[in-house]
Image (cartoon, rainbow, N blue to C red; front, top):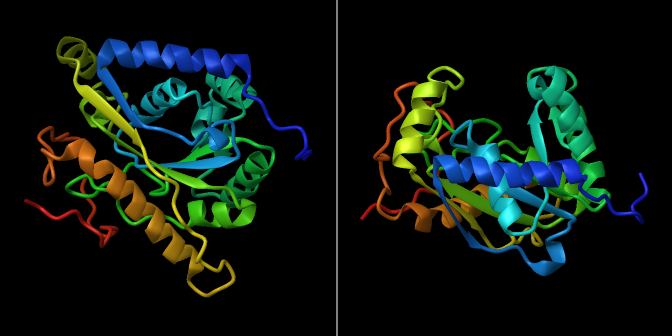
Length: 258
């Protein structure tokens, strides 16, 4: 890939981000805080976000548009197989992740190539919608750290809170009642961009480096999330009954309860 000709986001994707802002604005009140350094805004950069709801990609697309960033999402392969959505995802430059298959490793190579071409790539370090009982970021997969090692790009943590009040975990099951409720209540959805994660002292060749870097990234996302939910440090007020709980991946760093 030609690293001297930086990748530029297609107009289709930038238009989709505007649509995302309209959708989020109809269903919720979006508040965006923090910022991305000017030198990183057009890439190369890795955005590492917590994952709490099926509505997250729309929220993050909207928040990134507010900050003038057009990231390429690492997204589940099922979206790429859809007749219309799949073509749009490919045209927009998003990166296919075929979880649970032998081809899943290709996503890391594709993401590294994308960053090398000057792109901003958005990843979910947890690798799934988190199932921590208190909805704090759970222990991450090492893919984000390995991506950072492979391309040397800066990792910027992004935290979001409130999207779990818009769409349920099992969406599209229960979609219509949730949309009507959101149209009526318009919950607050907050997104905050944090300071770049310092990985300079982590030697990629050392044993356990990917795990140490991953824990540091999850710590950073957790720290950025804290001010977004100061009044909900424990169990969230909104509890989605369709969302399962899994304590096997609880991250050790937990914000102190008041």
